[in-house]
Length: 277
Image: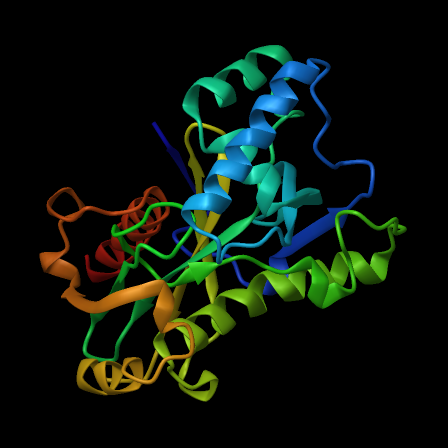
């Protein structure tokens, strides 16, 4: 089961100014001492490539730990990982469970993801149905989302780099910028028509406690306009259709949602319904 953590402070989500990230080169995933197990995980990746040759092994950020302070500041420690490490350590529940038993989180990828509860000006949530061309959760209903990208900060998981305060600040910026870029690329809503993202919480997706940070993004776009924008979206290969659902009608049990979408929409619905009381 995935777990969901709310970051609401006094009933409000977190803005970019209240997030701190330490990015450390020593906080990459540790190699398991069993060569046989590592070889088996390598086979999982090769099998995934055969099924979906369009996926690639990009660098990703890795969550090490996090703490929400009593004053409403979220402090996180990150390292680097890769999409391959994610598939190898988290796509098989049996493998992930063994890695946790043997070393807690240190053998897991824990790649950082982002998800958007995107709300139109007429108060609809914007959802998409994933295509079968994506690496995981094919054909399930999802929210717009993806990952902050280390390569935008000139980082790669296979190349040495040094920690710095500049990189720490860039990580925070990339976390918040990435979700806006994902909405723009997947739904095609212009950035100028999106409000600044607010961090609602995080979904730790089973079996490897893979974090997906849930953001609320309001837009001044109507549902009809969203449908028009979506028809020419850049990343259309990732989805097959658009769904727009009213807050009051949103029933996650009736939809086949990804774990990330389930957590994101639950956090958003809880926050928005409380605002209506």
